[in-house]
Image (tube, rainbow, N blue to C red; front, side, top):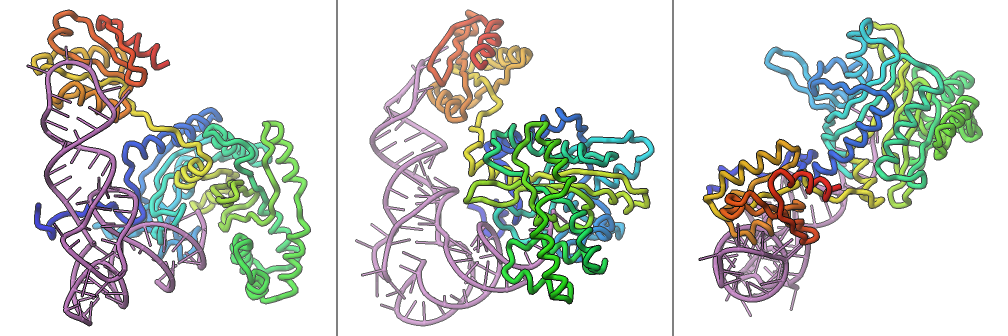
Length: 421
RNA sequence: GUGCUUAUGGUGUAAUGGUUAGCACUACAGCUUGUGGAGCUGUCAGUUCCGGUUCAAAUCCGGAUAGGCACCCCA
């Protein structure tokens, strides 16, 4: 054994994950469903570097997030660089940079990894992947409905039914109207909104709110207004639009605010209805002013983001995770070293017919090679030795059923595809 | 950043402060020259790290590190 002091740790960095093949399989399963749904709604895929100028996040996000919750460093050319903590500013930047060339409305999506420097806990890591889907250039209830419909369709494509989750919807304009009518100054509105976002988790909510507003009368009046507001005509229009698309698990919940300053209209969050995991999984909303950050005129935009960690937790708790299957369909077992070249040639011929083939060079006994294929859950095995080389006929064994069939090389691929469905 | 809690072979676990730290799985080798999933045998491999208390520490104490949970904050 090597000297302990010189050995490098096999542990991954704090708050990030290794994706072993079984993990990556699930990751890919989730991503493929997201991609398929987005593209079925006419969304185009885009991407960008994880590195951004730090200033991109300074103006629109709070001080604490930039200073304490991002990975920011100075590069060798004295530039402040940040590992993207979210995708929306990058999306807005890309649109603003080419706004003359991009026909609006545009529908874009990406599945990107984002980073935040904080203490990891359940559902919150330092790196996670999230789907971001945004429609830019259209305002109104039908665009809002489409975004919610995509979130809904993704949940269904992953196996969830409407009983498994609910879509809680509100509208930032409800709050704005209340702030106006109560004469709450612009300066304390953002903080008040963030406070409302945490309302359900707080015990002394009313006291803190009165403190923030510096007026217990205003606090009481605001709470009273909120509690009496069950819906708005806009949200009811939205409900109708969703019901036309057979989406019936929307509920109006004026307590949904989504903490961020940039939302300007509809906001929503998707909740798990399982009593043991009754929490917000992901959400989104309308933000019509983000392009002004780049000196651009406002452009109406609505979007949402869905993270892989919460998606995986949801699938796990609802027993919806797929069971692992490798991409490899066939293992070619070499039973005599003299047949190795012949086995590799066979594998190459099968690959040309779109069969995925791994050749086993271990030199172990056939039984052990079969055992390994079975353990790796490879469905078929073909043993190749001098007999096969000389006759040109191969025995294909289905490891799940034990069934064997002997065929000439050119008929193997067809047999496999019909057996695999 | 704060608090609570946990840490034993690769994995999962066991061990009143007192034998050589036990068991299962995995891996590897063999019983077994071309058809497996079983069985048997054997091998590799562990008390996270640093310090303290004690005749004696996996076990008690302090610190570090890492994981989990909650707070803070929420993209």
